[in-house]
Length: 552
Figure 1 (cartoon, rainbow, N blue to C red):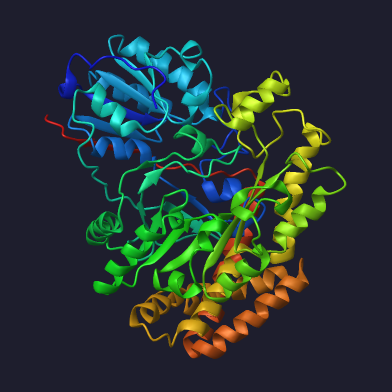
Figure 2 (figure 1 turned 60 degrees about the horizontal axis):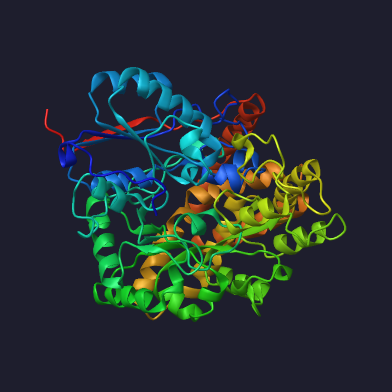
């Protein structure tokens, strides 16, 4: 868990702690490691990046440091998404004893610069580095830090402050996303319109050789559970519902459905308490196959992020799985799918890779993430490439994030070719299947038709709640997409037109009014947004600052 461990801090739980993410801007090329190609927007970065104004734009808070702040007794401030001047200002404003910096590998340059500023302004402060950047071999020799924490940070920080590491985890109330926008318009951010994030565990026991998350939290067969039972998870969801007013939950667990007894215990509580919640989860195909579709519907599974690596890759999670049939069945029942496909695996060649990408696109998932096969420090794949002498020299860490080019020598595909195939994958998916917001409308509508008369009133209530947006704003979006796509992709425009007609037939005058009154507004705003993006406009998250256990 810990790469470097010190004795208890001299001030213990009286030490003043600052926890911070790295400074912005994040979507612009700079000398510290930011890249325009790698913005701080998960969906636009890795999933909908080729979809222009249709791309989902949103930010997510740095949940790790918020979890640590909520689970220590020491006075603790969190500075999330600061500018460099704002970070310096905070260091001058308060005599912090500990400054913790959380980052990913691509941002190691920013970590180095922040350490320099801490040494200049607070020379007596202890600097602690955490997050995936800690996986870089010899990081303590690359940045001027005192401690490097590899793995789960709550227990580590409690031990360092002399607190009880075993006391129960308290989950803060966390909204999943903020500053959401699509087609050039900001979306609602109230509890009823967005999800709460619940983090039952970190790590994944499946341990795919390329997975940095699994490797960072222990590797194959290991993970850290914060909440072991469905009872505990239900309690945390109740708290979030009460504090944030939400009815949907992003379950940040790398393979939530793998623990079937825990999931069914949660379902029992949802039934007993008449909760018509919607759950957005990560899960592997072998875990999904443990459930019937009816069980998934009862559990409120509304969205699944799943790995759809090539069936030729040999991963056990896909063994004997008819992924095309399963994803189709899930979508027909209203369960939205985000498929994830790795581009440039060992068996890929210029002769077969386009067919492999086409196979992935044929799943017609609502969203599709494409990532380059990338040896990340700490993973088994990285160790293999080091042993085989295949890691490329001189690659800037800022470019090691799976969305640019190879950082290793592939047997048949060059570094420049890897970017070509990755870009083609995103574009091909967009051209074949259309905007993701169209796809989720189709899945949502299919689920509504199939389950609007479900015998369980909880299920009926959930689908009625989810389909509200289809009757209104999404009807307008479909109208606008149809008009725009007619000139560039007639086949997809025809699919949008058919769906819009079905939606209007089902929901009547209200849906038609939304389409014809608000649709033209979205048509204009999406055109304006594409012009802004073509001119290099980028989006940056707001800066957040909160204190806890603080006495003036």
